Length: 494
Image 1 (spheres, rainbow, N blue to C red):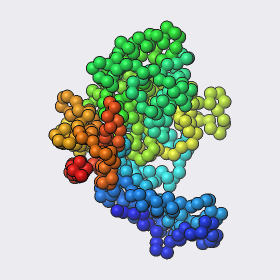
Image 2: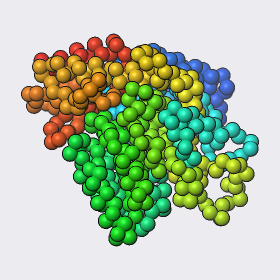
Image 3: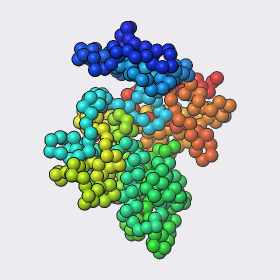
Image 4: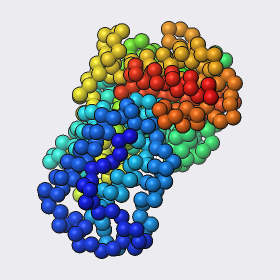
């Protein structure tokens, strides 16, 4: 495997004694521009070598590599710093014990996109520039760049009608914003109604003072991922009669199956009738809106009051990058703005509200830059080719890969495909859920992951242990399909 080897052989290592020694040569103020350039060249060389080797890297480190990484960490804060070169020695060992192949083509553990080349390079640049995107100043283009990146996402997914939008740390933060906006928009006390909500919804409700108790609406007899509309109507009517406000949360892309409810327009109509706020948690499933042949799965998403998406999932931009959309910018500024008491040094003379008035953090990195870079470098066709039948794009190619794995499992004598559906596509989108017909003592997910060739998530569905394989990396291709098949055969033959 490729390891972090950007340091010269004369590099300074961590002293073995528990108390780190003083060494004036390690003081960074003495580092010349030439020394920095040399270290930078080494780091860049490592990144290039790792990028070229991602398809062959193990999906996660060995226990020995983790142990070495942990042992490399200092036991306490040194009195005198080691300096840049020696500190990189520590980082070298730590990185070797981290999830080395998470950005690679066969890491299917989470809906974890890789990082497109343009996004990776832009992310390196933004760390160097260290821009704090918070105040709308005429002297910087950062805030307008963020709004432009969000505009491009809205064009990709057909969300142009959402005036309030911002970039967050991820879907959890976006769900927090959604619940906060909803809380202030409906009557109090408030009921939160959901079916199979993601844990981040529970966390968001708790954080914004709505409590952790969510009213579970029964599922439709025809679709266990969809609200029973009569039951939802009855609960909304009950809340209204009791003087309560209602927040309805619906998910697009169920966490285990990748399935969709299919009745969002009807849910939106009921929310409108009873004055409820509709929040759509579409962290990865919302991107189906860009693909004509599966766009029907997201029908009604644009009718929501707020939407959560994750850029670091299917847009393949670096962690962390969440996206939040809501109808009116005022929904955000009413919750997060300073009102009439804005500090003078944070005042904005721009028509675009400062990000700190529409987001949780008062300081944050320039997440929009790699997002913009990826969107501009690939364009609409790079994510979803407008000519049906081509597989040069990320979304379609990932879905095709998932279907091929699902078809293989469906034919396999040792496996059961758990999220099979009728119709043209054997699975809903890009997730494959399966189990062994005759389970062995060691969990199937562990046996797959221990090969270090493929990484999946162990889960449970309908009371049964299962494995989830989520495909969302731009690098995943035909060669990886053969490796996946080999691993699936290997782990049931032992």
